[in-house]
Amino acid sequence: MTVASLLEVERLKKHFRVGGGIGGSGAQLVQAVEDVSFRIESGETLSLVGESGCGKSTVGRMILRLIEPTSGAIRVSGTDIVPLSGHALQPFRRRIQIIFQDPFSSLNPRMRAGDIVGEPLRVHGVAAGVALRARVEQLFERVGLSSSWMARYPHEFSGGQRQRLGIARALALGPALIVCDEPVSALDVSVQAQVINLLTDLQEELKVSYLFIAHDLAVVKHISHRIAVMYLGRIVELAGGDSLFANPRHPYTEALLSAIPRPDPRKRGKQRIVLSGDVPSPMSPPPGCRFHTRCPIAAQECRERVPEWREVAPLHWIACHRR
Image (cartoon, rainbow, N blue to C red; front, side, top):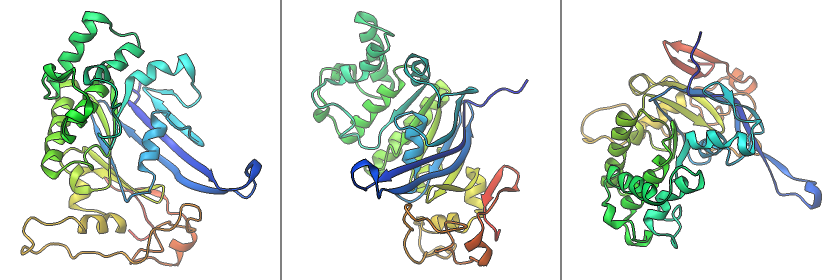
């Protein structure tokens, strides 16, 4: 009997209607996410990377059911949660939590830090009274915050400390999967490293899985087991972290990797690839391969036909006609 993956996303789509008059007449369709599929195993980190607006955060919010998919399946340990609602969905909400991008706006400024971290425990009826306080103290200490700070308000913490509060809140219910929605992009570089190290330590200790959303490949290099690269709503390459950095196959991935600054610019490395043009609008994506308008090796078939998803090396998948 095959054991189901912790999370399996299959042909996920999200289309938004924007604009238009009364009754929706004249509205335009934004194809934010188109046929996205991947899986995450227990204790694994899958990073989802790409330029701003490519649909990464939309994928994360669909997995959390904060927004509804247009179509597709989201299976948690084999159960498709897309048709579920209300009480049937509640156990899965406990298993999947989120760390938001902005530690300044994701915490209620009128709540004390201890109440923020303890709120999931109260909402789900997991703990109350002395037991709740003991659990919150434990969570504070686990993320590197003093439990004596529980009575403080969010504005009394630094940016990195606020993100640690967000991590503690996400851990409160003992989730199996945490969606990390660009959790370090709003932090200083030195603090970014601290937060990533904390997430790595927590994964080793708790065997929690991460969907790590980021726009910077350099950030995800040391935390990822596998990396999926998105462009304009589609995944164009998926591989193990070492494989992708050592041998990127898709032209878009090559361009992203070439943009990572080298510690010593005097050392020769791959030539910087500068893509021409801008990212097309998801309201009118190009036919065929969506990257062909900026691709340096595009051919006629790229303009006419959507590339198939194929394995070009063991566990290394791309969607490209030319590679």
